[in-house]
Amino acid sequence: MEPSVLHVDLDAFFAAVEQRDKPSLRGKPVVVGGIGLRGVVSTASYEARKYGVRSAMSTAEARSRCPHAAYLWPRFEVYRATSQAVMAEMRALSPLVEPLSLDEAFIDLAAAGLTGLTDDDVRAISEDLKDSIRKASGGLTASVGAGTSKLIAKIASDLDKPDGVVVVPAGTEADFLAPMQVTVIPGVGPATAQRLSMAGVRTVADLQQLDEDELVRQVGSAHGTSLHRLAVAADDRPVVSDRETKSVSVEDTFEIDIIDRALLTAIADRMAHRVSERLQKAQLSGRTVTLKSRMHDFTTHTRSSTLAGPTDDPRVIARVTRRLLDDTDLAGGIRLLGVGVSSLADWIQDDLFTESEAAEAAEAEVVDVIEMPDRSREQPGYHPGQDVHHPDHGLGWVWGSGRGRVTVRFETAETPPGPVRTFAVDDPLLTKRATAVAEEDAEAETRHNGPNE
DNA sequence: TCTGGGGTCCTAGGACCC
DNA sequence: TCTGGGGTCCTAGGACCC
Image 1: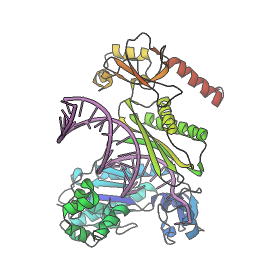
Image 2 (image 1 turned 120 degrees about the vertical axis):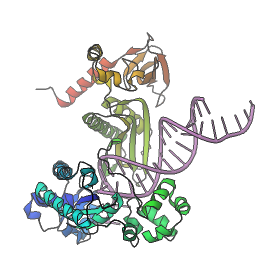
Image 3 (image 1 turned 30 degrees about the vertical axis):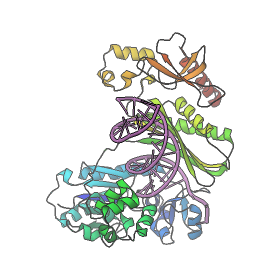
Image 4 (image 1 turned 180 degrees about the vertical axis):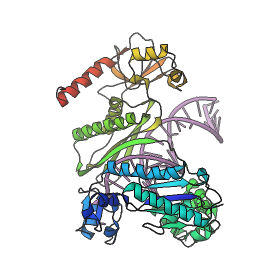
């Protein structure tokens, strides 16, 4: 074994980028984050940290601690571009890089064929990487930790910030961890620390003594077993370069609590559209729509609904969102609203094509179409969210389809969610109304935006 | 000093099926 | 008619991370 996992952490990243781009801010306290009434600090420059300003602190408190700091909204596009340049330097060192956020990543040196390294070799590689990061980023510094596992590398990178390198020699890991507080272990937050302290556990050494069964009783099965291993530095989690997206969401905290249902409906609608845009850009679609609401007293509720098939259609997401909001009690007001989509599929739904395009694709014997999973079970011509009409039941929309049947949810005045009925796919009484709705939407767009040039 | 926005993972209960 | 246990899916909430 050798310390072949690196953890790289850019120092005070957002604030450092602002100081890079605006020389007058250099050497001065800079706070990047939400600047509004209910904002929190994302990053404080080291000059601001001297005044006790910390990440996740409310901006109001930061202002009282350090009134003369520069307070700036984040510029994510700039951070993203800088991050990409930095990650490129890491990938030049090894093909196996796992970004954790814009300013952090693991690097697996062994995957680059760098084996048989001494601690000094690893230190030299780390220093070289820091140099190339500085050049590629316009002067940003990074801190690097190196160890035989992610756990050790991650903890090490924090020990000599900013601009430091810490290499933990193989074989010394358990002793390295022993004197530290349990909260250095990623995954041990305030709640877990509280439970552990009730069992007399404060340091990793205390944790190393604790019986696994006792630990599981205190913090649960998954957390307990993993913690029991991490305490003795037993960590075989691999560095993974491409992690799949599991959910896409948008949320907003309001300056003032909102009670007005019509206003919230309009906001939720816009959020549904934003989520849809981001899904489409990422070529994703999902089956579960979740509405998140944070009440005036900070209690948080989620309401979710799962469709029979995945969608990225803004109308479908908005409609489900609206229904979920209708089920939400607004008494006392709402401070945050959010819309998310999960249960993602990485294929795009075929209703993005017109029927004639789909027919053309089928004729051309496109292999991709044949290989698409699950879609085969869905009935051609029907897709979730599609508007339909039935003379006996009125207007409704498709919930899902498959095995020769179409499930329709009818919208009636009496109840949300409304009754669900299933029909044979060739039922002559069931008619599609997709065109009418598309035209309505186009019309609404025109009214809203004015005619195109 | 009242607490962001984007995520991930886990737990627990109920429905439903075999 | 009563009584099972396991597996999977869905929903809600919570802890945690940057």
